[in-house]
Image (tube, rainbow, N blue to C red; front, top):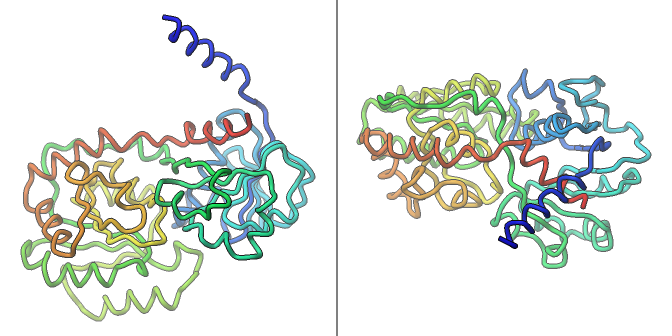
Length: 360
């Protein structure tokens, strides 16, 4: 009884002390985007997360200024988007996306957060080390794999806060009692194992499931033109195969992509050491799409083995797991139901509150 009363009192105290009407400044120097970009063009996971966190702060009653390389300034969904060069003198919370160099011209902030998305060994570079070693800030990473990549000297100032899911995800739910046709989808960066997947597809999966289709939604446009030549070379290699079971699509906006996912039976993705959260897998599972992955990067954290999909420790396990989902309706329904039940917890407004709690 005493414990319950104490816990209730503590929760009330935390709520009463929760800061409100904050001025929050978020800054990114790597990509040309703003809030409108999320609705009108393909956008990478990091940029998507930036937009949706900014908008969630606004929904929680705060003023947000977001600085990026996008030239035009506008208010969009309550966020004041400005060019990266805009001078801000002071704020309550300053969130740096990815790049420690953005500490150099930082406003006078009550709290500073470095939000990282790549494996954190780059923080050991001297130019980053010298900016961070004596700086009073918090580093936010997105999971255990990500946290374990942090240098020892900064781990004590670091926390894990996962990425959230777009509200749009929760408008969709795959509840069909009839398993869809054997259509598999790939939506990640082609540099991250797509040619490996195509090889597995042609030599194993398609042989076992002759009517299966692999739909690839990918292109350099999602990443603002970065690595255009490499990505196009990979896609051209696949085009040259002229395999009728493989279809390439231009990347599409999120709402269209969610509809494509709902028409799919599974998502297949090898994974990559650079994956620290993998928003595409999180979104797919939240929509009820089982996933087959390898335990590379964070993928072993994202997918629950034989619960929401398959975490394959060998190529053979990978294609056998995919074949099982494509051929066995009961297996697919089991994984689909578990995806919808277990993978819809990451709501951005809750995630935003975790950032605000760092102000305490």
